[in-house]
Amino acid sequence: MARAASLVWTAPALDDLDEIAAWIALENEAAAAALVERELAAVERLRRFPESGRKLPELPDSVYREVIVDPCRGVYRREGKKVLIVHVLRGEQQLRPGRLR
Image 1 (cartoon, one colour):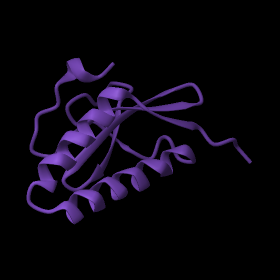
Image 2 (tube, rainbow, N blue to C red):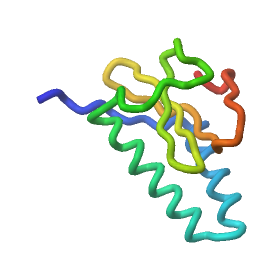
Image 3 (cartoon, rainbow, N blue to C red):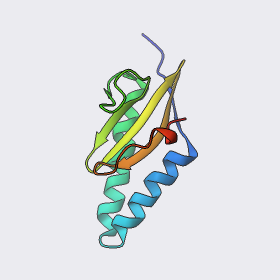
Image 4 (tube, rainbow, N blue to C red):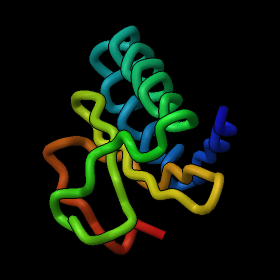
């Protein structure tokens, strides 16, 4: 059986998720906590299936993929046996390619 990839959340991606959750928590703390739990659970599958996210529509020829957890998009890339979560944004936000490092 193939070894699972390691999952690495970059500091900017964690900051993104925290900011989104903080905004939602202003109105509904339980919804914010539930969103964070759903995002973490969805990204967890990338350990076993790192290619399961869809290619970014804005950058289809890039190494970046995304996992969608409404209302968020978690953007990631593979680096060998690592899966790096590099950016989290709300679905209505435009992707800023400069954030993908």
